[in-house]
Length: 365
Image 1 (tube, rainbow, N blue to C red):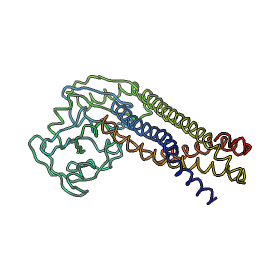
Image 2 (cartoon, rainbow, N blue to C red):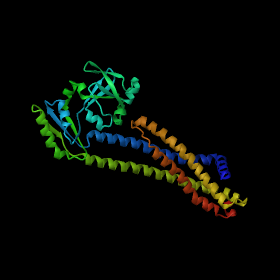
Image 3 (spheres, one colour):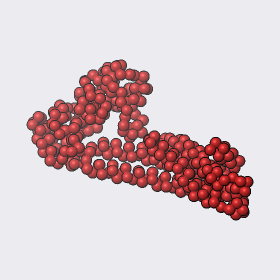
Image 4 (cartoon, helix red, strand yellow):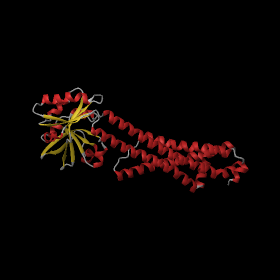
């Protein structure tokens, strides 16, 4: 086997130009597949987060005279996942950070942490890195001209790519720390998110009745209602199928390219194989030699294709603003498929060439 590998490498080096174009074809097929999958995965995440921001199963209530305390009271209802104020983000231009006021229940639902007291703050990882801050440090934030020193309770990863694209720094604070700003913002509406399995249409009357009971002076108006969980789940499911189809089509195109290249290589080497046969080289050794050469070309092209695909996707990401998301498992599959295709599509032509008569094979030279 060592001799066959050595001869295959020598053959590739000896035929640099043809080998280069063969490798280039494989590389382009793999690179295209990796780039398409990584960019489409980033686009999928943006769409999914955007859909999640719509609210998978929620209602929006506007209320004249509504209070911040209404949120905490509503969250006590067993079927409520969390509640928040629509557009509840305060921009501290001095520290260049947007602070989102949320409740502890929402913090837990978002898997960021499980504790959010009035003097706590969670920094997004880019902000923590920029300010050189760690958990337990103090962080100053300016709220309506009032300087507050808060304890950094945690550092989180921003999962919404739309915020990343905007190039802003983000932090999470307790809704109460933003008063009276939160009281002025509450007129925009209360977003009440229910557990996914709940029927919002059925529970809306109970929520409205509870709001009027806990705050008789408030006048509440329902501005959005409907069980959107099923709709959003279907959209995400169809989106996953669409992305998978793109990846599958890309692999098929790449495979077709590899198939044509390998068939061409076999045909070009037929005369060379005839010479080897005339020199007494066995059919088995010729078969192994050609198969190893095909595998090596696919291996080199696949390796360069993965590297090139990652570089291309990074460049495209910077231009169009969609993050490139890489899956190690998918990249390994693409790489293995490229090698497998190189070997599989080299088997039939190699077998055909190894079974040829030596004189007939040399005529192809």
